[in-house]
Length: 414
Ligand SMILES: *[C@@H]1O[C@H](CO)[C@@H](O)[C@H](O)[C@H]1NC(C)=O
Ligand SMILES: *[C@@H]1O[C@H](CO)[C@@H](O)[C@H](O)[C@H]1NC(C)=O
Ligand SMILES: *[C@@H]1O[C@H](CO)[C@@H](O)[C@H](O)[C@H]1NC(C)=O
Ligand SMILES: *[C@@H]1O[C@H](CO)[C@@H](O)[C@H](O)[C@H]1NC(C)=O
Ligand SMILES: *[C@@H]1O[C@H](CO)[C@@H](O)[C@H](O)[C@H]1NC(C)=O
Ligand SMILES: *[C@@H]1O[C@H](CO)[C@@H](O)[C@H](O)[C@H]1NC(C)=O
Ligand SMILES: *[C@@H]1O[C@H](CO)[C@@H](O)[C@H](O)[C@H]1NC(C)=O
Ligand SMILES: *[C@@H]1O[C@H](CO)[C@@H](O)[C@H](O)[C@H]1NC(C)=O
Image (cartoon, rainbow, N blue to C red):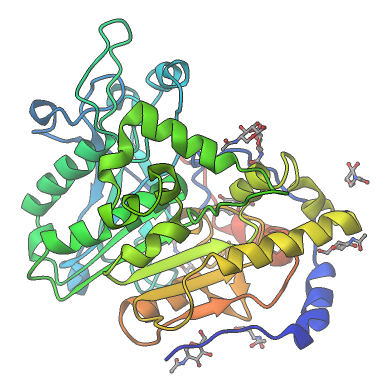
């Protein structure tokens, strides 16, 4: 069943509803996931180093083997798999990649355990649809969004650009670990991990010929080609990735035969070539996207409810472009969407728990996505609220804080 919420007439009503509850924004300023374990349900999972990766040249920026975190499924989730690609921006110059290679985003030697929360929670009442799945969180250590494949290693820097090989090496290991007998499997990715989750969706499907249900999700990684008057930032970024990481060959030929490879990095240009069912979850005002495409610091006025009339006009124009860049609602079984207007970024981990959730008319992403995944209802939902909403403010601050406090505990450092 397809369905689209676009009711301009209820706009004023809803606007008032949210203005009344707008509150102070907590500025989170990076796409590198802020791994703060807030809730009781968060648990840490140690890293697994991929065994046969180095011999395939599938290595992190610094030459170390790639890694992931794995929590086995149980009960009726024992044959259902969530395979998540981590986000964390990109490095586009040798200097930036060298710097990155000295962090957990460029070397598995520097990775610790990872906190599992949100969709990764094992709490049945808080995460009823996903709590008992097999869960894999693949660490992002190549700087090129899992797309790079350059054989040459400069002896001076010793940097490796091998993201595409990492993806394949991890899949080989997961198949042996039980993925190949999955009944259902999801390849998902947040932020910089969103594009590769789309890019490798059909390949993931071919790895699982005996799995009845295979689908993919791009969470907060649907960055649009916002041309003038917006900043064409992402085109410059993608041009640099293609040059430095040798990413072009990972891109679909159907796309690169029609346009230059950097343009094929835009989900809007690539989505039509994905044949496996794909779900797109994003805010039309994704924090990372608008900071980069509209103006640095643009998020601040949303939290303070003092954006100017000109800024509001710009927001409307941006949203309209964002919605135009989405797949059309003609076949939501193949292309499901859940687009809200909250100014946040990456929902799968940090905006998922019932203590910390944003909704579109009471519909949560977790419910909408589960319905779509299990073929119960093919979600194509767009928030009718046209201006950005502070994610924290929308949650009735006092209530949210009380709930968080009740469910927080001091967790040991990892
Ligand atoms: C916006 O971008 C600037 C410059 O890249 C960065 O310093 C800042 O932290 C970003 N803010 C947010 C909210 O992402
Ligand atoms: C599990 O979730 C329920 C409902 O969301 C909550 O009341 C409970 O405290 C959670 N349990 C843990 C251990 O987090
Ligand atoms: C976008 O451009 C601004 C300024 O030109 C810069 O600070 C920012 O890092 C750029 N972001 C990306 C993703 O290229
Ligand atoms: C908006 O409000 C914030 C917080 O009250 C303040 O710091 C900022 O200067 C205001 N901005 C404008 C343009 O008035
Ligand atoms: C811009 O929109 C916000 C609601 O998103 C509102 O609080 C603010 O007053 C508007 N600014 C002007 C100048 O109308
Ligand atoms: C909950 O909301 C806060 C903002 O108050 C955010 O920083 C955090 O990542 C969210 N998620 C969890 C699991 O606490
Ligand atoms: C949303 O859900 C709450 C509690 O589940 C309920 O009280 C409220 O009436 C619902 N609102 C709408 C608009 O459905
Ligand atoms: C399908 O989802 C929409 C909201 O996305 C909801 O309004 C509708 O009632 C749902 N239909 C079923 C059969 O659950």
